[in-house]
Image (tube, rainbow, N blue to C red; front, side, top):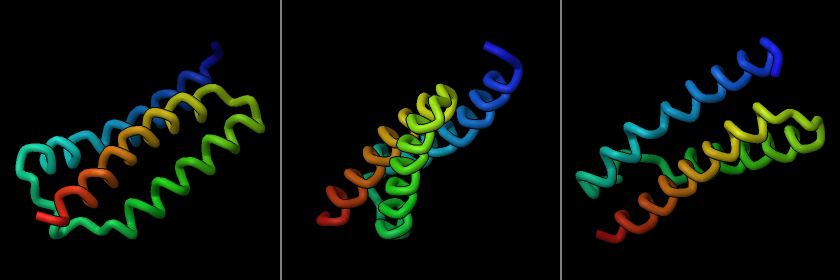
Length: 86
């Protein structure tokens, strides 16, 4: 692994981690009224496209960080849909 890959993993980790506080807040409060489902849906789709791009370029940092981001954002989309009913 070279310094460019390490930089890519670090950048991706920062972006990936940024979603965690919001997920934890929603999980604890069960409130999603102020959160946009459309925004998270578009973001999640964009992340999926980044994964495809990473696969096509054989770029492991893009694949790994966006794979984790995809899972976290899918959790958030689920929470928005599930808790919006309440």
